[in-house]
Length: 475
Image 1 (cartoon, rainbow, N blue to C red):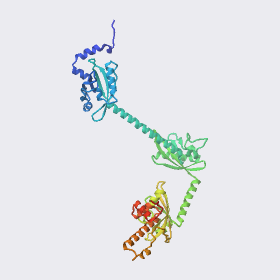
Image 2 (cartoon, helix red, strand yellow; image 1 turned 120 degrees about the vertical axis):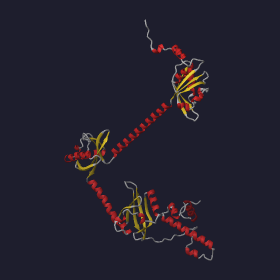
Image 3 (tube, one colour; image 1 turned 90 degrees about the vertical axis):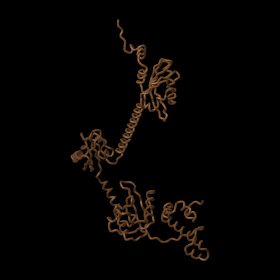
Image 4 (cartoon, helix red, strand yellow; image 1 turned 135 degrees about the vertical axis):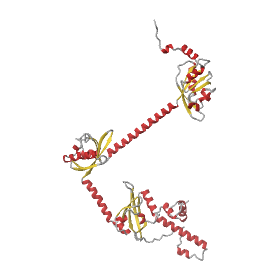
């Protein structure tokens, strides 16, 4: 009787020993090294007694210089225990398994190598075969990065969809999405449901034309046909539903390989007419008020003005004012502009700011300006109300401890004090008067007053304390 055996059973230890014993040692070393990128023979004490390196990268990293070194000393601290376990398992003929070991190179880099250790059967020697794991680790890192990128993109997509849904639900304008094939409504926001929908018959699922009155259904069908044929162009028409008129604008777009219509509805009824009439009344009032009123962009270029502004600047028409800089008419050059803009951008409003106005003929007059900054809307702007004033000089009583002298009083000191003392008193008086004038001009804004006077803030505060001006705390 013939007993059949498998190839693995026929090739036993004896067969392998006879085969390896029959080839040269150099060929045997090459066969072992071919199993990986590096092959080592480790003695009983754990020292590397022979090594063969097949990887150019490992040669460049200095693996061939490990000869006669302890294998564990070539590894990082977290991998030395793995090497001891592999050597112990190989010595006890425990089934070999691949283990990953990290090696620390001289330049500080870390190289990952997967090893398997087997008993060589001679004096407790062990054969260790290693495969460079850097390529696999790099692929794994790229895979992880790709997964993280996909997760980030998916998160951004979900956030964008959430924002779209929120905007779609909260928009005050009625918006409807229609399937381009069936012409049925597949999405409608609450504003659209409120305008043309109903509790008994919601919009979603209904035909678009059926949502409007019978006389308007042909116009609704034509609106979608024009939007479909117009490509990127937006088609518009007037539709009627429930006794109300709507301006409908439709455009075609594609999503998920399907063509859809986006229709926006705006009401045309008495409410919009009331709003328009109210706005027109406000414009008429501004045109007739005696104070000059002007609107500029953020660069102070005039974009609108009333008749009083034309009168005060001696301009013949509104066309002459449009596009000109308000700075050419209002304020002291390079002084008031900075004060006006900084105050408006910081506080949003400015009230009763004293300055001067120059008309087209070069004449000047004192004015007071109240202004507001409107940052909202498509074009942020400034609004200025300009009122002519008549100034009367006011006398200020001198408090105790301040400089009580006027120019006339100083002139009486000639002959009584030295010229040096007289010049010092005069300088102090002029300096104090200039500081008071700057504070009055800037509305007690000390930072702007320091800029006008060409002083630092600290220097201005020192002089305020010296002359007892303002309410600075005593040091």
